[in-house]
Amino acid sequence: MAAVMARPGNARFQETPALLVEAVPSGGISENTAMELCISICLTVHDESAFREAARDRALEDGLGDETANAYLDEEQHSLGQCAIMLLDPGVSPNGCQIIDSTAD
Image (tube, rainbow, N blue to C red; front, side, top):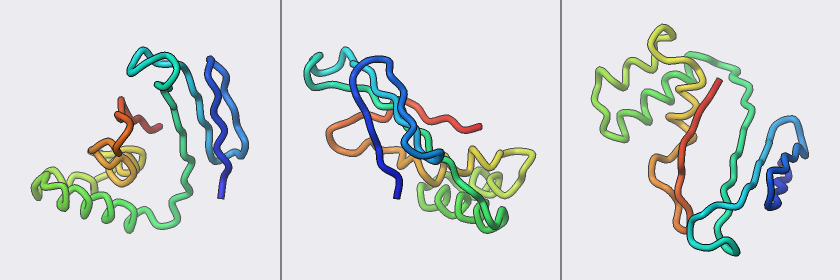
């Protein structure tokens, strides 16, 4: 399990090669309580087909429709990074925060 470190300012930390967290003050609730965190997670995909199927299944669970969901099975329509976003970004922010964006390479 990777340890996560964050501190205010434009400092970047890397405790392990698999997890990077960047924390900067945000103009949200107040300078003392709001902090923007940028988190990177590195994955090893051992079975591309199973990973794509999992992304399709999540899209179906989220009500995106058959055509949109099945597009996750096609590498020309969706990269593995886009599949990861479908699987790892819940779409609804957890209490106490707001997901601003998610990206993948």
